[in-house]
Length: 360
Image (cartoon, rainbow, N blue to C red; front, side, top):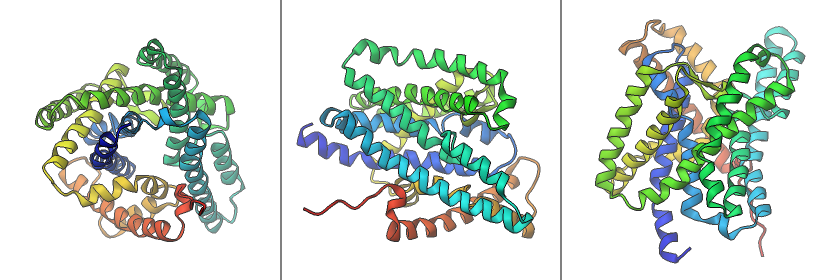
């Protein structure tokens, strides 16, 4: 990669952070709301896929997979994804089991369930995303390393077919997901990884598309793509990628994920080009991993939601008042997580996989 391209890559990181911030804020808000309303349906289309798309975009932009061996790439991702998976899972187990013990005087059953989810890689709460991303990236890196354009092209086809097959299998055995079943947990994890590979490929190819589209043209494309996500959300429903629910029309899940992800990248790239400052999005985009690990596992959302409900009963009918109240909860969650994130960044960066490099 030339020095010019390296400088360009560094320059373009900001709008990727903003897209990830949008994703993590939508995920957090989705954990606060309890009703299957139109806003939830719209967010479910691309709030997770945007992370996979940006990851693929970064792969193409940095070109690090060309310079590093497969062993180095695996090691790097084990550190950046595996350590946070372990540390935030441990935090969730301590808090959840501790709270259960204080409430009932026991917690062995909960501890067994949480450890089972951890070791099968199904994950605790939003942390399911980390092993899925790891597996998907390793698969996609192997495809890139193969140098086969045919295999890369097929990447856009086989994940769609496989996810349709695996989602049907999961639908037939969905009741087993509530129990402790290694077979079902592994199937769920691998199914989501296959979905992720498809979106990684989209993000990878999107980088080369962005190279040819001006920012002003990108803004128009972004607005049109966002309009499509609204239309798709009115047609399909029941999307929950964590549980491999692809909605009424699975094709719209894929189309909506692409439209929302690329639409956000186009819009944020335009805003960055116009020097529009988005400090909140910059911060939470760069710290999206911490927000993911802190919001549900340690019960932060649960505590704040119940506390807010005790002083201001939250509306039970979806509407302006309902969303205004939940946005207040979101603001309180972000303030709390901000404080915890700063403590981690300052005193425990290793929790995020940021290990100190050896001197010399």
